[in-house]
Image (cartoon, rainbow, N blue to C red; front, side, top):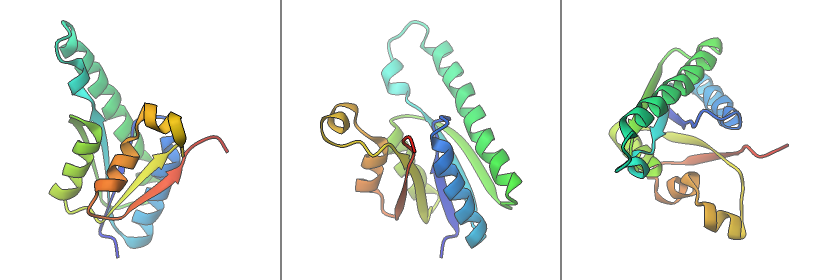
Amino acid sequence: MYDSVLVPTDGSDGSERAVEHAVDLATQYDATLHTLYVVESTRLSGLSDSDDVLESLEDAGRRAVDEVVSLAHAEDVDSIEASVARGVPHEAILTYVDDRDIDLVVMGTHGRSGLSKDLLGSVTEKVVRSASVPVLTVHIGEE
């Protein structure tokens, strides 16, 4: 049913729950697991030290996707692809989905509603609304 599963990560502890679900699905369906970290470079344009900041954020991104790869290897996922990209997070995720023929996206959500959601925005919500493939959301708030 699923040949490729994408789990975007921001490297947070909460995103680990989404990663666990994605790894489980990749194992169950013998699918390739993709993990993606997006550095939001658009907010840094014009800063004098933006190159240093971007390098630091990309290093954090590599550590985040490496952690997903380690967790997937521990669960015997055979095929794993890890990427760090720059751009607007939801747009980069949607582009990745289209470019790599992803079958399923697994993303964490805090389950915010009302004013909190409106003020903070949500990458997950934007992906859910615009993705051409199913998006499984995993509640990552406090248990």
